[in-house]
Length: 85
Length: 405
Image (cartoon, rainbow over all chains, first blue to last red; front, side, top):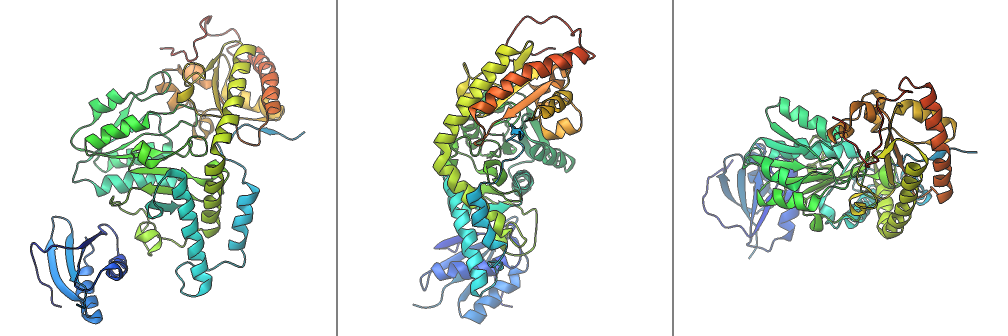
């Protein structure tokens, strides 16, 4: 698992799924990534702990770039850059 | 002769067009919307079409509609789901004393969980005073919930003004529109609310379907966890026939609303006038159609009859083929004076004689005249055998609502 902490990444699109449980983090990720252009960054806000492994794994499987996470007081922000370009 | 139904606040008959729309989903279109094959995807499309129609009824976007099993579930979801999701703002919520039990009871449950709850008082017509909200609201108030219209006394609350106060304070605002949907135009942008509850069977749709409007971007904690239905906010395989029916009923309601309001206001006014003229010691509850027409729900005629008891009056009327109600269903079953009437300042004795006629589109003016004709005789007969036959004091005033303290 290549979990890394980042700061100050600017996202092009944000999805807030705080309080939603598995598998909403993966469905939302997939849904939102479809709307992004190659090279754009998606931020997903979630408090679901399973996302800590699932989102980096998903990125590895799909070839998108997992930029890292930032911790907010009661949720995580995940940053993913869409592959291409 | 069949009975005449004056209890549309209890429930509505299903419109034939609504039943038609629902039937295929009990039979050949039985698919699960999560299934990938056509049978499932067709069911999914039907739900999304219904979602669009319900959104249209209240001026919302389809993704802001969460289907539930009932208005009560939508109310519980709003109270618990929003209060618990916004504790960072604070653990104080405000509701009015006019609320349905599906708001009051989750509010009490939240109190047990450590929330502070303020119950806003009302005036003799059942109106919440916006200045009372201004006084009660604090920086820690995360949520305010006030009913749009009372099914018991017909009072239409100043939701727009109240929502603006909540917004200024950074608090969320929910309104229970179960009783007002189908009678009043609803627009979430105009009202300025963050959440709004609906129930299908109160506007000629089926039982078993309700909806919570939740403004886009508002966090909520689910009541029911499980699958990804309703974007993970409300799990459980959807009640597709009922949801489709709710969509159809919303579509009809949107198209017919002006005509419904016109017809039901006319019949309401005739019924109120007739009952007050022909029966002694009867008082209107809620705003008067003359001085407060814009504050009274079309189709809702509610009274307190002195010296008798509501349940006996209902039985008497049933014998005459008149189906009405006495206060809220819950309080009449518990043979308890209605908390809504008491909070309006009506005495416990007078509140016992509560009677509510709620009219709907199947009613005719002839039904109304029949009720006006039968009602005085029923009251007279009951008073003859009532333990209060001698009255509990001479009443001369005919104020539409007499608080007796």
